[in-house]
Each structure stands twice: as structure tokens, then as C-alpha cells.
Image 1 (cartoon, rainbow, N blue to C red):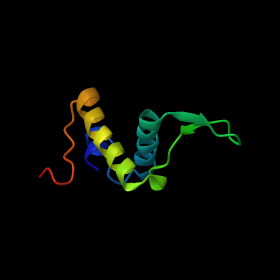
Image 2: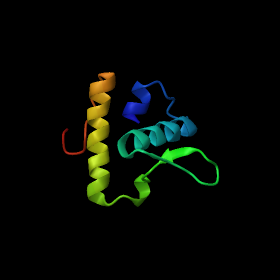
Image 3: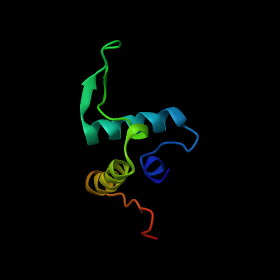
Image 4: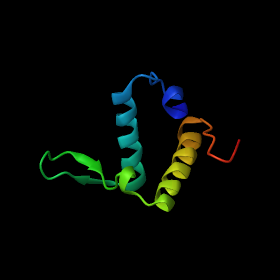
Length: 79
């Protein structure tokens, strides 16, 4: 919720957060065109990632948030 809140998403805006999540996945893993809808979607789904790959994704989000938006995201174990 921290990054979403900092970027202006309401804590109850589930659709907005899902949109942000998909956008971050696309930036992280690249995109493919979904054959049925012809829409660009993320190459990877976070729900299908290994624990190690998901950890890479979360660490990438923290770097992206800091580099692109000046937002510090505290990762688990950094408190």
C-alpha cells in the first residue's frame, strides 16, 4: 500500500492498485501480446514466480520507486 498511496491511489481502489501492479510487472519483465484480446500484458505473472524471482521483483520495485519517484519503499527485514 505504501507505493500506491504515495502515487495517489486510494487504499480502497483495488482496480487502480491492480493497474499499477500490472504496469510494474510490464516494466520489470517486459510484455507480450495476448492472442485473444490483442492487448499487451506482462510476460510474467507475480503469482507464478518462484520465491527467488518474486524477491527480485520486490527489490526492483523498491529501486524503481526510489529512482523514478523519489519514494523510499521499506522492504521486509529493513525496519
